[in-house]
Length: 193
Image (tube, rainbow, N blue to C red; front, side):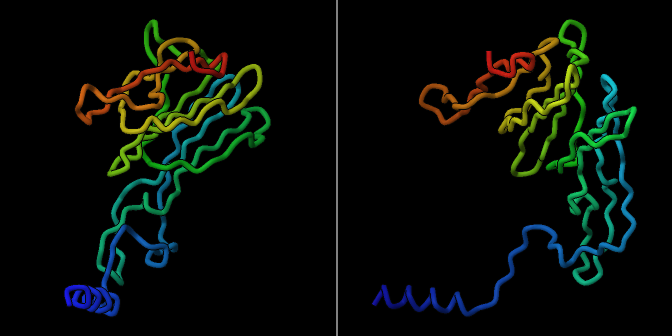
């Protein structure tokens, strides 16, 4: 009898309408609105790195009467071009609008032969994504690394090195706490030290 009751409840739940909200749907976004895009540029060794992000001003979506942010259009882009010729060398979408170029400071300054970007996705996914590019002698993307839930503020460790979280996670004692497993990535060697 108990099984029949549970089965009846399950079937009844399938017949009842329900709503689930997980963010804006593409069908509710008005693509006719003017969206101001911000461009942050870094030039290194004759290469221009443009990070394009939307200005995050809320606007009203009339059918749903909700405010959506301009960032929800997924307009975040990285575009790399040669300054002299304008030739497109690299383009990719980014995962957040919280993006910054990392250079280091004092004795931990990054060489001009490399450009490192940090994205912070925020929210429940709360991840740091590190992008590293070589600009000299030849342009190439070296690394895209998800730094998981660890927010390192000093990623740059020297002219050719960055500090990242490297799997596996380590637990501390018998608790379930995660410990940052710091590892040095050598950009010049394109490998972990």
